[in-house]
Length: 394
Ligand code: LMR
Image (cartoon, rainbow, N blue to C red; front, side, top):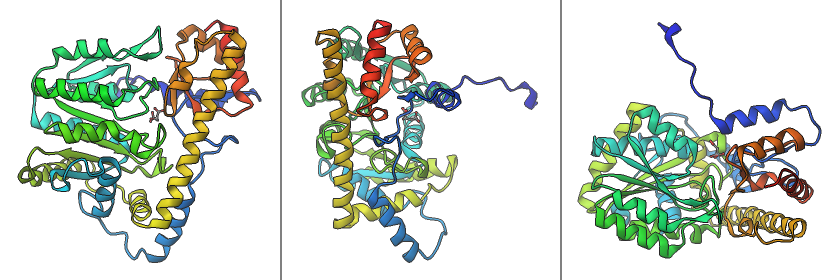
């Protein structure tokens, strides 16, 4: 029977990681997978995580199971970090999940339980794993226009016009900040207009927020999702700790279901617990516990925020350096959008052939749609990328 298995399409981002590893050239630049790196190319363990790990080693007395929804200190801490006081806590059901991807998967499951005929709307483009998971689950999907290839900015008119077709009971997936793969983000007034439209349509907003703190700051990056939860009766929010706590392999994430009425929260909570039980039982705890320790301790939290802020401003500086270098080389402002984009990614607007040429000729690796991980650059590789872009005619 297992002989009947068919080869599955490989994930483009993960495939690129392999190709990069196998490239024997000395000068090569990895701008593929979305992992933060220092200028030396290291993905560091954040200071506060190290400290919390030491403390945890001293005080942890058991590795027995947590609850199905994970540690309440974690889910409560994450609720406050992401949603602030935008919605009363008793309207929010929350469960820990294996990373942000786990939260996304659980959200789709929950949506399908609530509405077996659900269609999920995704931005065109979106993180490839969004569409891949939906296809795997057999959940119908539709796309809304999002990115204007000519300006490399959000095509908000196109988005609003496509969302006119959203039906009652559909889910509309939005990126909370730092849009992956484009780096082009909705403004707060645009989030407000989307919220109004979804309320008119009776659709459920789902916000995936995987890069809070990487764009304009922890609170600024959460402004859109906070507006959604305070202005839409219901919402799903999938949040990740992989990037902003740098604990990628620990798999810490949370799914929150915001209910219209607090009396309905226990049923939503029970459903989240149930879905966890069916899919993997108890969520991983180690990373989640470190996050809850950091969020609950003033000194650890301040240190974490300071380091995150350094990471964020470092990425902004790289954006400015790249835009400036391209201005110098091309004598035009047409790459100014790179400094306007926010987060870890920018879509450069190169064709697949140009992306291939940059990889083959210059050893620069980016995703086929010309998404770069800005954090993969440093002051020495910025000029290499800029020259390669000009050389291949981007
Ligand atoms: C990315 O988009 O590169 C990251 O979210 C990593 C991943 O799992 O794809």
